[in-house]
Length: 470
Image (cartoon, rainbow, N blue to C red; front, top):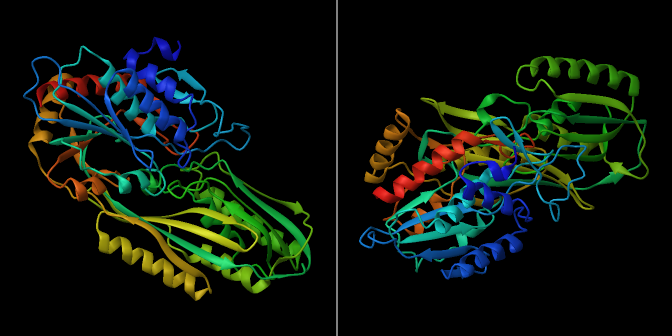
């Protein structure tokens, strides 16, 4: 079976077209122009702003002119992560879609169903003349997966919606009515170098589950960046030659690598290999495919000083990572070591901290900052966004009634630990009632990402009926 054979045809048609276009965060010009052209080809009122957000509108269908205006919202960018052996180039290569039983996945890369599926729903609704609806507005934003730059830059002065439906939730039967806020903490070390002493070794961590740092942070998965700290803490005479890990600040790091010199190679190998065995045993239930290898290596040139190397290692070892608080099944606060990288001048660690409560979010950042500063790091909160406070509305009741009629079961109404743009929209559209839903997507932000075919059709039918009744 191919994508063109799946139902609903329009949703999969547009998702297939989106998958042909580069749309990593920060590289949205082509997909933004595609959306503008979509609107122009249908003679819709359309606006593209400086942040490359695209807003377009459609008049009510016949007989629905008196209905309130509804905005359908999603983000056009995607997280670009690939398997270690993949040669995929996200800047030009299309995402290869594979129908795998009840699921659609990609070939060795993230699928982009987050939030390509939401955008495909919006395009299908605007293209389907059989759908009954009041006046419609589409708000499709950029940079949601990084700093929410599009939502931050949105000019809502021409948005007339009474209701906003965000299509960016990733579990069937879930109605999201609130989300966590987040902030990024950047920790940096200025490089100081010296001549290497001893022999070189290389640690390589790969194959760990990773995943979405909001939706899956409570599953106890190993963070490869954090683990470097554990593997090298208190190893005598370490001098880091090169170090990196993770791909996105909002993804649990599934890979990391460090090359280092060590004074007593054999003693270091014995201790590190013992730690590797312990870590793999501890993580075998959550990360069964994880691998950690230690091997002899070579390196030309100077390395980081012993003192600086020790500070970096101790920072990685002691920084908080993972679940902080969970209450009544909902994740409240967490932190994630998402990126470890270097350039000619610095070594940087990027932590993403999330919480439903702003004070808890900034407190967690302050704790991480104090720890890092003890090891002579520079620290800066580089971006922050507020959460979306839970509220009970008429729109929720209508949605729940429709879902129960169509499926025989009630929706689960909850908040999410993932970041949604609704929190920012509430700041500029305080009176608009909002909710979020979407088809089942597993493994978002990782190469194992996949979207359920049956759920895709079920949720599209739900959206069509929701537009008809509101």
